[in-house]
Length: 411
Image (cartoon, rainbow, N blue to C red; front, side, top):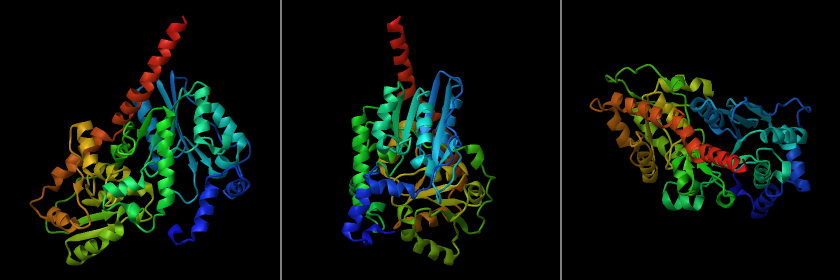
């Protein structure tokens, strides 16, 4: 549904309903998401017996909640980390320690109370995307749920994933290609939600992390917690040299407007007709089959309207593909300053993409060198070690030190 085509009063009604989840209409809308599972049938989180117990919830976008939890446990045996995700019908399915049916998450008060009790046995809870970890408990207010955890002695932090805290007006100002300028985006709501979430994070007084470096513009006091991919899962056989064959180019238009797919397709179709490239559009490919798909590609075209990069680009780089996309100077500077290396994504926008692909297809271009740089970069920045370090240094370790000091002062 393109909300820009709806009458203003309809959009106002939709927004009012979304902002009043506990109203009679809001309760009715929640019931349409499904009935809760039978009491006791959906598990609550349990932890190993460890000094530090971390819960990451509730969205697990691109499997990142679980990846960060696993990275923490790998980094420190004193940490037991778990994640929780809501199972949204029709969405992408990623592994999680606990997957909660959407009807139970919204309407299962028995599970909500049981999961809250389980979360109070954590030492730390990381709330993703400013979404309430316990569904409609406490008026579905993430702020009230966070306060309840704090009151129970749990250390709370927040992690912004992307559109939840990427301010459209700022993005449009800084990026002439911004996907927020696309007529498929209902800008008023996107602006309201991002501004609201940024204000919540700023007044929370809690540690704030971001999953992509461009979000540091909107949240300058936050810490970058890089997305994580498993290099072993994406490792691919060495590709045969071009030797006159077309350059194999792949593109996954998961969200065409955001990726800029309509802007680049004319160029790609023309180059394919010319025989310069062999184009594969990765649509509807299950996550389990993506490593094999990337293994066949020389080049993966990422995003051309976001000015940043995320999980898909990292997966492609881990597979030894040369990634091409539009990345802002701010993001490249952040990568350079954090890791003392250059981001190996080849810069291009829709107007320069043809020249970039022609250059990559020339025998003189050393694709193998670019591939090796991409693989090395993922090992440096996105194999989980840097993410665990960010969470430990800026949240877990200071909290543990404070707790020890408090314990000592009581003796």
